[in-house]
Image (cartoon, rainbow, N blue to C red; front, side, top):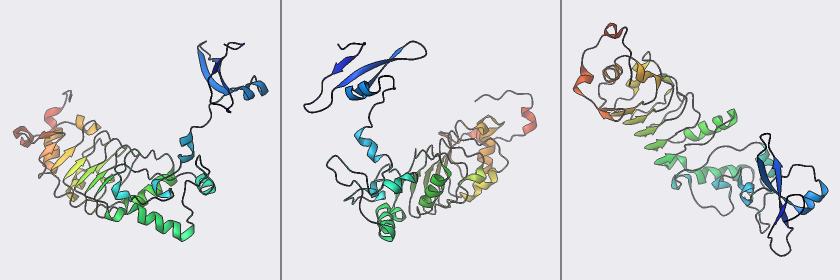
Length: 277
């Protein structure tokens, strides 16, 4: 043990020793941080922070930025395509690995853009999972939309939890299965155009009205629809009205079409009834 309630940590030969520095929170609970002895001696009252992890240098890096990469986007199961902040361009050619070599390729200008397009290869991708991109800024959404516009051949597209509010400007001409769950889509008119679509997942969105369900006619081959945990699920005669609007539909919310789903229904019959599903 060292004086002042600190303890030492073993280190490798030639490296600076580290100590555990207890700090008090507002609730009186001690929190342990790590600092070098040199830092502690120079600034004894300054809060101690952990050094960046080795992976920190890759925080803005996409797979096609890496030196010597020959993998294309259609070969990846869940690639990161979120655009980095402006600082990424400023440090792109300066970031080094442990051996002092640049982690990124050295291409610039038109050559860099062409290499990126070839590496992404979105036009030929058949299955694409671009979920959980953590799109927090408008410039990231714009960049992501540009990627989605290139999915001309994709048959299966996963876009879960991508902070989408409106996809009506997009078109997926070859898409058969589309997962848009855990977004912020508030109506049917916000959905993309997919004339060959057969299965659509809209779970955990914000669709709450039948007012524009006629827009679902743009999916003439739709067989399976999942809208669990949308406000619309609490509307009167929910299943009957969905199957009436989409007559070719076979499965709704994981349940095949039932005889009762074809029953005649008038909204007046449901007045005063508490609908729980």
